[in-house]
Length: 244
Image (tube, rainbow, N blue to C red):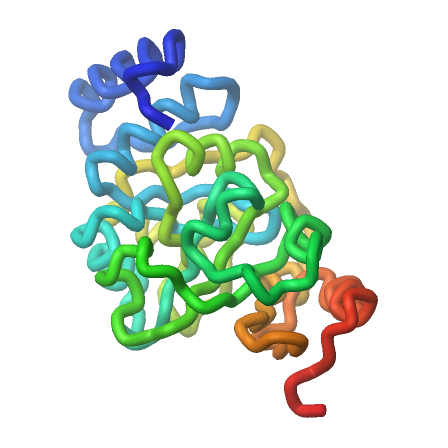
Protein backbone atom coordinates (compact mmCIF):
# COMPACT_ATOMS: atom_id res chain seq x y z
CA UNK A 1 0.00 0.00 0.00
CA UNK A 2 1.30 3.44 -0.90
CA UNK A 3 1.42 5.69 2.22
CA UNK A 4 0.81 8.74 0.00
CA UNK A 5 -2.74 7.54 -0.70
CA UNK A 6 -3.72 6.41 2.80
CA UNK A 7 -5.38 9.56 4.13
CA UNK A 8 -5.63 9.38 7.95
CA UNK A 9 -3.02 6.61 8.13
CA UNK A 10 -0.51 8.84 6.37
CA UNK A 11 -1.04 11.42 9.12
CA UNK A 12 -0.42 8.74 11.75
CA UNK A 13 2.72 7.54 9.97
CA UNK A 14 4.09 11.09 9.82
CA UNK A 15 3.29 11.59 13.51
CA UNK A 16 4.94 8.25 14.32
CA UNK A 17 8.09 9.32 12.47
CA UNK A 18 8.27 12.57 14.46
CA UNK A 19 7.66 10.76 17.75
CA UNK A 20 10.34 8.14 17.06
CA UNK A 21 12.86 10.87 16.29
CA UNK A 22 12.20 12.46 19.70
CA UNK A 23 12.46 9.27 21.74
CA UNK A 24 15.46 8.27 23.81
CA UNK A 25 17.18 4.90 23.29
CA UNK A 26 15.33 3.28 26.21
CA UNK A 27 11.87 4.36 25.03
CA UNK A 28 11.03 1.40 22.85
CA UNK A 29 8.19 -0.46 24.59
CA UNK A 30 4.69 -0.18 23.12
CA UNK A 31 1.31 -1.67 23.90
CA UNK A 32 -0.64 -2.84 20.88
CA UNK A 33 -3.83 -0.88 20.46
CA UNK A 34 -5.28 0.78 17.40
CA UNK A 35 -3.59 2.39 14.44
CA UNK A 36 -0.99 4.36 16.42
CA UNK A 37 0.94 1.25 17.44
CA UNK A 38 0.73 -0.04 13.85
CA UNK A 39 2.16 3.25 12.58
CA UNK A 40 5.05 3.12 15.07
CA UNK A 41 5.95 -0.43 14.02
CA UNK A 42 5.77 0.46 10.31
CA UNK A 43 8.03 3.49 10.69
CA UNK A 44 10.62 1.51 12.62
CA UNK A 45 10.64 -1.17 9.92
CA UNK A 46 10.88 1.44 7.17
CA UNK A 47 14.00 2.78 8.90
CA UNK A 48 15.62 -0.64 8.63
CA UNK A 49 15.15 -1.48 12.30
CA UNK A 50 14.29 -4.81 13.95
CA UNK A 51 11.23 -5.08 16.16
CA UNK A 52 9.83 -7.76 18.46
CA UNK A 53 6.26 -8.58 17.64
CA UNK A 54 3.69 -11.17 18.75
CA UNK A 55 2.23 -13.65 16.29
CA UNK A 56 -0.52 -16.24 16.62
CA UNK A 57 2.07 -18.62 18.10
CA UNK A 58 5.28 -17.26 19.66
CA UNK A 59 7.04 -13.89 19.66
CA UNK A 60 9.05 -13.03 16.59
CA UNK A 61 11.79 -10.65 15.50
CA UNK A 62 10.84 -8.88 12.29
CA UNK A 63 12.56 -6.69 9.71
CA UNK A 64 11.74 -5.53 6.20
CA UNK A 65 12.62 -8.04 3.47
CA UNK A 66 13.42 -5.05 1.24
CA UNK A 67 16.24 -3.85 3.49
CA UNK A 68 19.53 -5.77 3.23
CA UNK A 69 20.87 -4.17 6.42
CA UNK A 70 17.77 -5.27 8.34
CA UNK A 71 18.20 -8.84 7.12
CA UNK A 72 21.85 -8.81 8.25
CA UNK A 73 20.85 -7.31 11.59
CA UNK A 74 18.34 -10.12 12.21
CA UNK A 75 21.09 -12.69 11.88
CA UNK A 76 23.40 -10.71 14.15
CA UNK A 77 20.82 -10.28 16.92
CA UNK A 78 19.96 -13.96 16.96
CA UNK A 79 23.56 -15.13 16.43
CA UNK A 80 22.00 -17.22 13.69
CA UNK A 81 23.83 -19.41 11.20
CA UNK A 82 24.02 -17.39 7.97
CA UNK A 83 23.05 -20.48 5.98
CA UNK A 84 19.83 -21.01 7.96
CA UNK A 85 16.97 -19.38 6.01
CA UNK A 86 14.46 -16.86 7.30
CA UNK A 87 10.72 -17.12 6.73
CA UNK A 88 8.64 -14.19 5.54
CA UNK A 89 5.31 -12.89 6.79
CA UNK A 90 2.74 -11.44 4.39
CA UNK A 91 -0.50 -9.70 5.20
CA UNK A 92 -2.91 -11.67 3.03
CA UNK A 93 -3.20 -15.15 1.55
CA UNK A 94 -3.91 -13.52 -1.83
CA UNK A 95 -0.38 -12.06 -1.85
CA UNK A 96 1.51 -15.32 -1.37
CA UNK A 97 1.89 -15.83 -5.13
CA UNK A 98 4.13 -12.75 -5.36
CA UNK A 99 6.81 -14.48 -3.30
CA UNK A 100 6.16 -18.22 -3.64
CA UNK A 101 5.06 -20.29 -6.64
CA UNK A 102 1.55 -21.62 -5.97
CA UNK A 103 0.65 -22.94 -9.44
CA UNK A 104 0.74 -26.62 -8.44
CA UNK A 105 -1.03 -26.30 -5.09
CA UNK A 106 -4.53 -27.79 -4.91
CA UNK A 107 -7.15 -25.04 -5.29
CA UNK A 108 -8.06 -23.40 -1.96
CA UNK A 109 -5.44 -25.34 0.04
CA UNK A 110 -3.55 -22.24 1.08
CA UNK A 111 -6.82 -20.50 1.97
CA UNK A 112 -7.75 -23.44 4.19
CA UNK A 113 -4.42 -23.45 6.01
CA UNK A 114 -3.99 -19.69 6.28
CA UNK A 115 -4.28 -17.38 8.11
CA UNK A 116 -3.14 -19.75 10.82
CA UNK A 117 -0.21 -21.22 12.77
CA UNK A 118 1.44 -22.77 9.72
CA UNK A 119 4.45 -21.88 7.58
CA UNK A 120 4.19 -23.13 4.01
CA UNK A 121 7.42 -23.64 2.08
CA UNK A 122 7.24 -22.96 -1.66
CA UNK A 123 9.63 -22.39 -4.51
CA UNK A 124 10.56 -18.71 -4.35
CA UNK A 125 9.71 -16.23 -7.09
CA UNK A 126 12.16 -13.85 -8.74
CA UNK A 127 10.49 -10.92 -6.97
CA UNK A 128 11.92 -11.93 -3.61
CA UNK A 129 14.98 -9.92 -2.54
CA UNK A 130 18.01 -12.03 -3.59
CA UNK A 131 19.75 -11.00 -0.36
CA UNK A 132 17.16 -12.98 1.58
CA UNK A 133 18.26 -16.62 1.85
CA UNK A 134 20.73 -16.44 -1.08
CA UNK A 135 21.31 -19.72 -2.87
CA UNK A 136 18.12 -21.28 -1.48
CA UNK A 137 15.38 -22.06 -3.99
CA UNK A 138 12.49 -22.22 -1.51
CA UNK A 139 10.99 -19.78 0.97
CA UNK A 140 8.80 -20.26 4.04
CA UNK A 141 5.74 -18.01 4.09
CA UNK A 142 3.55 -17.10 7.08
CA UNK A 143 0.14 -15.44 7.25
CA UNK A 144 -0.48 -15.37 11.01
CA UNK A 145 -3.99 -15.36 12.38
CA UNK A 146 -3.23 -12.15 14.26
CA UNK A 147 -4.48 -8.81 13.04
CA UNK A 148 -1.68 -6.60 14.35
CA UNK A 149 1.22 -8.25 12.52
CA UNK A 150 -0.81 -8.54 9.31
CA UNK A 151 -1.72 -4.84 9.51
CA UNK A 152 1.96 -3.97 9.91
CA UNK A 153 2.92 -6.16 6.94
CA UNK A 154 0.18 -4.59 4.84
CA UNK A 155 1.76 -1.15 5.24
CA UNK A 156 5.45 -1.98 5.56
CA UNK A 157 5.50 -4.82 3.04
CA UNK A 158 6.46 -8.43 3.75
CA UNK A 159 8.52 -9.04 6.87
CA UNK A 160 11.53 -11.26 7.38
CA UNK A 161 10.41 -13.17 10.46
CA UNK A 162 12.16 -15.42 12.95
CA UNK A 163 11.56 -16.47 16.55
CA UNK A 164 12.40 -13.95 19.29
CA UNK A 165 15.39 -15.61 20.92
CA UNK A 166 19.04 -16.31 20.38
CA UNK A 167 19.60 -19.35 18.19
CA UNK A 168 19.45 -22.67 20.04
CA UNK A 169 17.65 -21.10 23.00
CA UNK A 170 13.96 -21.60 23.89
CA UNK A 171 11.45 -19.54 21.94
CA UNK A 172 9.58 -16.77 23.73
CA UNK A 173 5.94 -16.08 24.51
CA UNK A 174 6.58 -12.82 26.40
CA UNK A 175 9.12 -10.02 25.90
CA UNK A 176 10.59 -10.56 29.37
CA UNK A 177 11.95 -13.87 28.12
CA UNK A 178 14.32 -12.13 25.71
CA UNK A 179 15.08 -9.04 27.82
CA UNK A 180 18.84 -9.49 27.29
CA UNK A 181 18.24 -8.68 23.61
CA UNK A 182 16.18 -5.51 24.19
CA UNK A 183 19.21 -3.23 23.58
CA UNK A 184 19.51 -4.67 20.05
CA UNK A 185 15.88 -3.93 19.17
CA UNK A 186 14.24 -0.68 18.10
CA UNK A 187 10.76 -1.61 19.33
CA UNK A 188 9.11 -4.22 21.53
CA UNK A 189 5.35 -4.57 21.11
CA UNK A 190 3.17 -6.02 23.87
CA UNK A 191 -0.25 -7.60 23.68
CA UNK A 192 -2.71 -6.10 26.14
CA UNK A 193 -3.15 -9.44 27.96
CA UNK A 194 0.03 -11.47 28.25
CA UNK A 195 -0.19 -12.97 31.72
CA UNK A 196 0.33 -16.60 30.72
CA UNK A 197 0.89 -18.65 33.86
CA UNK A 198 1.51 -21.88 31.98
CA UNK A 199 2.87 -22.42 28.51
CA UNK A 200 3.35 -25.93 27.18
CA UNK A 201 6.50 -26.96 25.35
CA UNK A 202 4.36 -27.55 22.26
CA UNK A 203 3.25 -23.90 22.24
CA UNK A 204 6.90 -22.86 22.22
CA UNK A 205 7.59 -24.87 19.06
CA UNK A 206 5.85 -22.17 17.01
CA UNK A 207 4.19 -22.75 13.68
CA UNK A 208 4.10 -26.12 11.96
CA UNK A 209 6.35 -25.87 8.90
CA UNK A 210 5.22 -27.75 5.78
CA UNK A 211 7.21 -28.07 2.57
CA UNK A 212 4.71 -27.88 -0.32
CA UNK A 213 7.28 -27.21 -3.04
CA UNK A 214 6.75 -30.61 -4.72
CA UNK A 215 3.46 -31.16 -6.55
CA UNK A 216 1.10 -33.58 -4.81
CA UNK A 217 3.38 -34.06 -1.80
CA UNK A 218 4.09 -32.58 1.59
CA UNK A 219 6.96 -32.80 4.03
CA UNK A 220 6.66 -31.71 7.67
CA UNK A 221 9.87 -29.80 8.39
CA UNK A 222 8.90 -28.78 11.92
CA UNK A 223 6.23 -30.30 14.14
CA UNK A 224 4.54 -27.32 15.74
CA UNK A 225 1.12 -26.02 16.68
CA UNK A 226 -1.94 -27.91 15.33
CA UNK A 227 0.18 -30.54 13.60
CA UNK A 228 -2.57 -33.19 13.47
CA UNK A 229 -5.08 -30.66 12.14
CA UNK A 230 -2.59 -29.62 9.46
CA UNK A 231 -1.95 -33.20 8.32
CA UNK A 232 -5.69 -33.88 8.16
CA UNK A 233 -6.16 -30.87 5.86
CA UNK A 234 -3.29 -31.97 3.62
CA UNK A 235 -4.75 -35.47 3.30
CA UNK A 236 -8.21 -34.05 2.57
CA UNK A 237 -6.66 -32.23 -0.40
CA UNK A 238 -5.07 -35.42 -1.69
CA UNK A 239 -1.48 -34.68 -0.75
CA UNK A 240 0.78 -37.53 0.32
CA UNK A 241 3.89 -37.56 2.54
CA UNK A 242 6.99 -37.22 0.38
CA UNK A 243 8.48 -40.44 1.82
CA UNK A 244 5.53 -42.58 0.62
